[in-house]
Image 1 (spheres, rainbow, N blue to C red):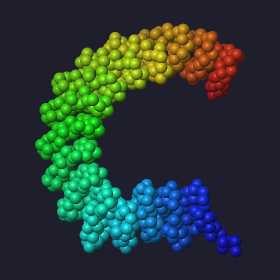
Image 2 (cartoon, rainbow, N blue to C red; image 1 turned 120 degrees about the vertical axis):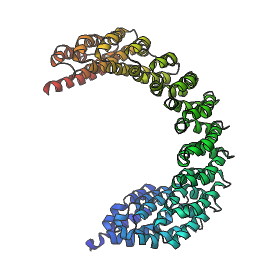
Image 3 (cartoon, one colour; image 1 turned 30 degrees about the vertical axis):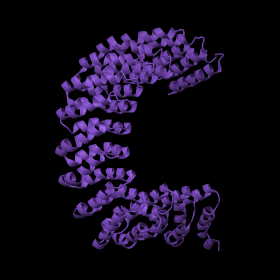
Image 4 (cartoon, rainbow, N blue to C red; image 1 turned 120 degrees about the horizontal axis):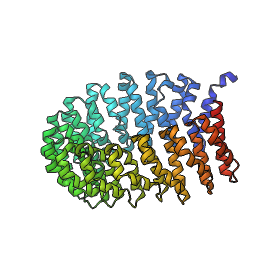
Length: 586
């Protein structure tokens, strides 16, 4: 009897847990559906588990979301694609719930299942389900149906295809804005499955209806569909149907629509080709760059380099550069920041002369901007300008401003400069670096902010890697070691950190002769934090130096620290001694 009842046990537990008041138990039960399905077998899963889930009227969104997700990967547990249609019923019910994220997940799972179903099953089960949802009394079902047409359409017969196009057209004219929004956002995916002959007639008619919608939330989704449709149409059709819409949208009364146009315009330029771009889209783009809403200007400014790449340099200088100059002094710091993040990329597009004449003054004004993010965005892209105008001109015009930023009162700006110093050093060369930036690197080791000191220590190591140990021995090591006796213990700690980073780069010989003696001296510092940092540094040096040095110099120092009155010093010293023992054994 027990053997007969055993397969019933999982479903009984599931039913109990799904009806439990504790949401966590219900969730756990849903997440174990695959395990329960395996225990039941394919046949009982189809006949008992799926009908039970279809009738389950749980009202908690978290449980329903987990169920929608699980069912999307459930085909193997119901007997493969031959029986995939049984999964449609519970997911169809989930497509009508109120919570958006549950519906979206149900649609995603239905798309995944529909893509694997046999063509005949799509005709017999999937298409009727789409039609039921599209005719649903509640708007939620109609919203969900819009995301399923691109799966249903390719398998449909000609009669069904005509019907599906008609239904989609009706959804685009639905009374509820939410349904029209869903239809607008899914139009691109649906259009990609529709035949070319119907694309120009039915789909473009639907598209035109959406572009004239009285709700701006529908129109802005129609803008996003422009780029998708543009890629499906021939260039001449794109110019005839899409271009006028975009030009109108760039002057739309809603700033959200204009913002979306500013984000999408670059992709549309690729779809319509170079000539219409020059004649129609450049004026539209210039309007957006001068828009009275800051959000629109931000979106447009962020695309300025990409836009210039598809124009010839002369046109960019004539039409776009005057707007760029205006944006560099825009009243909104976010507009200036968006411009600063891309403007350096214009240098390779415009060429050397135009960059020197037009862009350099803009770079300089942005480098002196009062808003830190604007300055950072310029600094981070300096290498793009260097490739165009050369290092001599760059150093004369921009480097004074960079040196000024290195002492900026905002520590994040100083931090950004430090992180770009190795890059600048590699571009500027040793001589320029020694003349202009060397002293700054040492200054940062004594900054008041810990993050700056830490970055400065890493910077010293990266410079040693860039210019080699010999250069570092002459220009960095003596100056770093001079600071190890600084009166402030925090600065002495930074120097210890810098020395531990330099040691692997300098090699064992220089480490033993120049760095190690000063580290050993620091072990007698009166501040315990310095002494336990000495123990940490010595531990990091053990693998890099010769065994005899460990025995004669490092171990005696660690043994002494191991008897220090401070508990933390003893702890790190004992760790270092264990490490040296392991090295000796190996």
